[in-house]
Image (cartoon, rainbow, N blue to C red; front, top):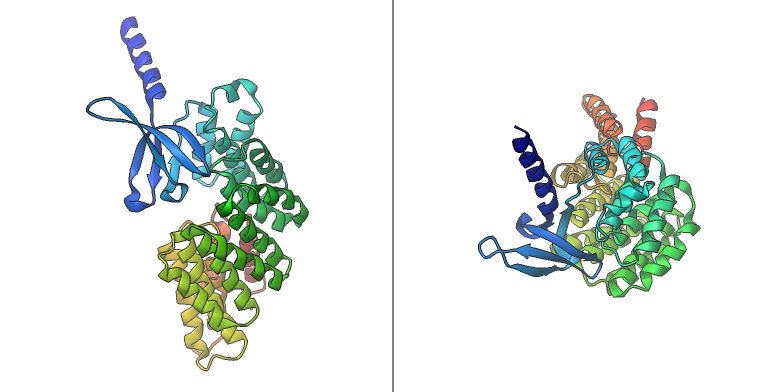
Length: 366
């Protein structure tokens, strides 16, 4: 019996030791199993073991080929935090990750290749739990200590959102400078994120210029698409609705990834609402329904996109709210309240500005 227990223990340990990292690719959801040896902005190297011969070969992936990375980690505290994060328990996740990063002994157990992810997911947990001010220094640590990490562009996106929420715009400028110094694609990303900051400060012309720079210099469909969507949002604000639609359609025709395609449908919906607000729509009910359809496409076709889904939920609720005030559309009032409630009760978005706007709309619904 004692021998059997020892054998089982060794088997469990061996499973942890030899567990593979999993890299899911954009194309066909292919999964590459192996040991990640490098995970940087210029590419990801994975040691892949041949199932028949046992030989190990290096496979190099471009970052825009990668949809998701699942790291093999043998740390109970980290895995508890990761499971909480995936379940929307961001406060609990942040507590678990904080325990890990503050313990030098625990940190020694993490491979150098995946440590940037630990800080990224810790910052995301703080940000999504409604603590953007606490998330900023975590993102800063990631950017300062792991300057070439694959997770830097994602962290910058969240960092910009944190700066918008806390109104601490100047904190982001030095980090965007670092990003610009890392190559053409990163420079394009820095221009895009600076455009987002400028847009949040109502500096529409300056934002449009930055988005334009990003669109021209971007080398990946994802960055170019995001930049085009930034320009489209500026066009909506400037009431140039034809241009907004043209830019949105342009990004869709280019075979945009899900994050960009969802943003395009969002912009098309917002442009339609702007037409109604500007008195340019003859059939108000029909145009509100068109806008609602665009927002529902985002929600149903591209679920889980953190930069577009909550906005689409809010706008769908607002569209239904406006429809409910038209003749014979009273039932849309309940549909509107249901959409607002869906947004405010979603653990992923409950602390976002979009959920706060939805709560305000429900409170003032007449």
